[in-house]
Amino acid sequence: MSFLITDFNGSSVVRLGAADSVETGEAARRIPLRGTLYDDVIRSQRPGVQDTGEGPLVRIVAPVTNREDAIGLLELFLPAAPDTETMREIGETAHALA
Image 1 (cartoon, one colour):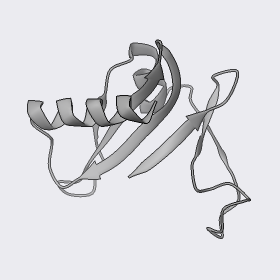
Image 2 (tube, rainbow, N blue to C red; image 1 turned 30 degrees about the horizontal axis):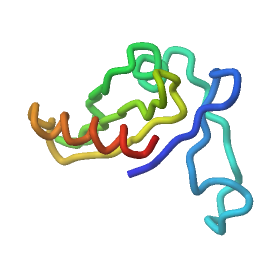
Image 3 (tube, rainbow, N blue to C red; image 1 turned 180 degrees about the vertical axis):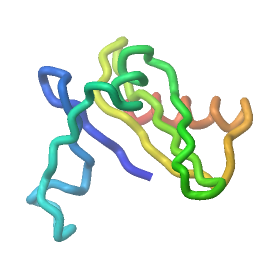
């Protein structure tokens, strides 16, 4: 699971824990949004599900919003597509992060 923070102009996100001040061994890297699942989720304000192409593994991205402003994204990988109840819980968890 990862938390990605949107930049001020909304054109990219940065994965939390990948900043220089956190000892991950990985430098902060901006991930451009245009044409990505991240972009779709931020624009629609609805969670998105994507097949990873790695067997049954799926990627779920949920918006983290505060007063309808997207401040970030919650990203997680599951071994199978989630059911409606699981998607609801993922959405609630993302909302709690705001």
